[in-house]
Length: 180
Image (cartoon, rainbow, N blue to C red):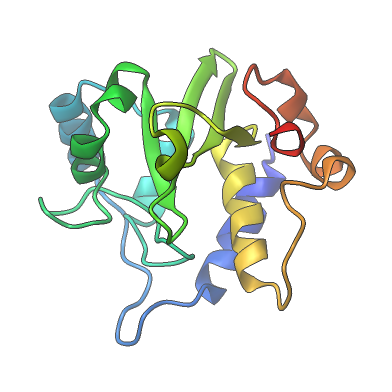
């Protein structure tokens, strides 16, 4: 089955800006991912495992993408979860930061849906502010597109445009961005 959002996200990845002298890092191995899951007591969704195998925590976007890194690295999933222990019990996996201390997390909503949601840590770090995408690949595609755009995009707050590109968002039980 063709995943258009996955293909588009992977096409955009090489164009993402990185800090000087840094590039897009290689992916993690299956055994590294398994060891991280074991340490956390979490099972990563298959699309997140696939993403980590493509690239492990690239320094792209406003707050960087998270991955499996040495202890103490700010882009390390495990390091972030030390500060937000309730996320582990909720099965929320941080995947990216926004550069202002807030995070995008994978949320297991059902067997068919692992949404990406936004948490405004300054407001309430133990509550989802709103869902941002119905799956990781859709999130990555639009996150990358918004980073590469010359102007501010309306994603995910423009209801019509967002639902045109991600109609499965309506299947989420989480607050919608245009309602928050």
